[in-house]
Amino acid sequence: MDIVCERFTTSKLQKFEDLNSIATYGFRGEALASISHVAHVTITTKTADSKCAFKGSYVDGKLKEPVKPCAGNVGTQITVEDLFYNISTRRKALKSPSEEHSKIAEVVSRYAVHNCNVGFTLKKQGDNTADVRTAAKSSHVDNIRTIYGPSIAK
Image 1 (cartoon, rainbow, N blue to C red):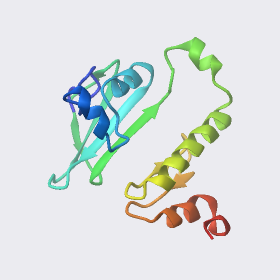
Image 2: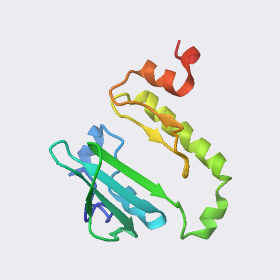
Image 3: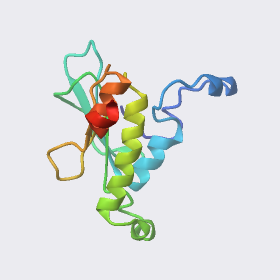
Image 4: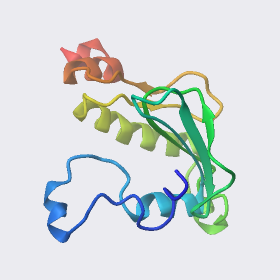
């Protein structure tokens, strides 16, 4: 957790040939470091054998303060807030928040339909209800029904 947003620290690749066997959509190498330089990133993670989860917040690839124990479910949750808060020209190029959120929801929905073993949750900042929520270990049809409705699932 101390170095997860530093450059090169999250890469699972040991050699060039490992590119042929990537089997997950996890953050790789530079991605998490890059995101932490243009947004506020919070990571909460808990292993199956841990008594509690741990939470850390990152700015510019560095941990803001020591990692703290907290309540949490098994797995890892990465929260990205205030995207491009420090790059005004890029922030100005974004469309309206609702239009950008719709684009993100479409991408997350597609990932959710095709990745039934992973649970997805997408919430708009400030909302209590999720726009996309699928259960882990569901079926493709279950996820289609949840996201697009029963008539499309048929």
